[in-house]
Image 1 (cartoon, rainbow, N blue to C red):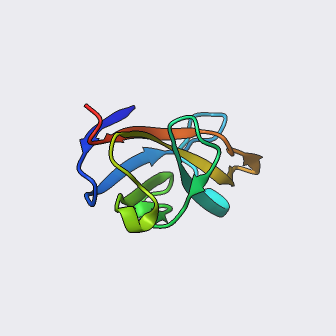
Image 2 (cartoon, rainbow, N blue to C red):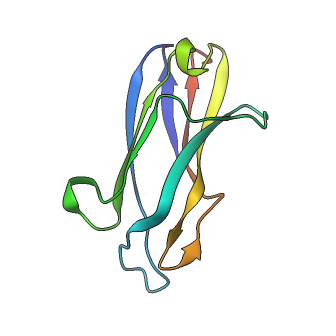
Image 3 (cartoon, helix red, strand yellow):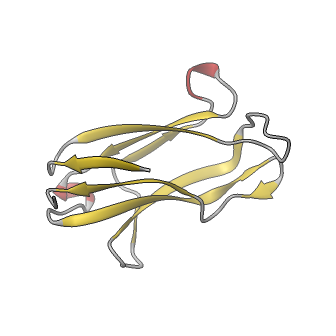
Amino acid sequence: MYYGDLRLGDTIDIKFTTVNTSGVPTTLAGTPVVSAYVGNGLTEITAGITLTADFDGRTGLHNVRVVASSGNGFATATNVQLVITTGTVDGSSVVGYVIGSFSIENR
């Protein structure tokens, strides 16, 4: 899902849900990490990204807060994808799942 065109320095919160094979909301476990990929680059940005698993005590609901500043490695005229780079759901790896995307002064 695309979350819009931000200005450099903006903060964005994105909620997402993880479920087990039966479709029941399930905790994102295994020391989970969400990283940002810019464009087609292979460099993962983790600075300025905070993941809160089971947000507000709701099993399976998670929040990713991104501070998209230049100090954290973000830049204007770019597209950004947020991806789970560490984590499991019900014992299965969810590494590689895309959480969402946004752009920074690129529209």
